Length: 127
Image 1 (cartoon, rainbow, N blue to C red):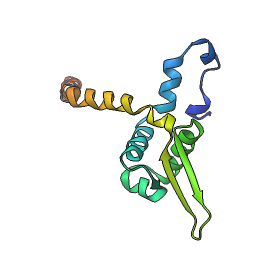
Image 2: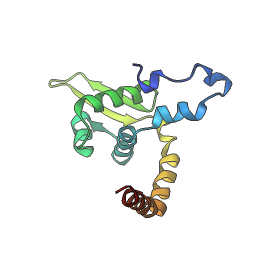
Image 3: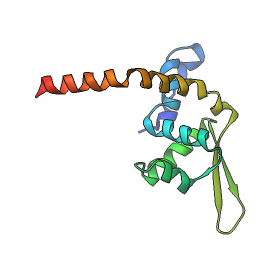
């Protein structure tokens, strides 16, 4: 099975499926949390990211970082030291997503209580 970033539409050049493609690049809770952590603290090592996102597995963190790096949103810098040190940071392109995340955050601040209420009502109606 292809990774989300490998499933990007071949028709993207003609404008087809652009929203889907954009959501594959930035979507999912892990990428959002990684980008959030890196915008708060500009340089983080792998284990620091793991501490900031405690529910993510090492394998998933590695996979998500690689996809973000591949898409040009995150930079990985390896230092020639012993022990090896690797730092991650948001790229200039990645920083252009800050307004998107701010709008999403504002939306959740305004509407999350409604979503929670709707979920409770739905769950109550199904039990």
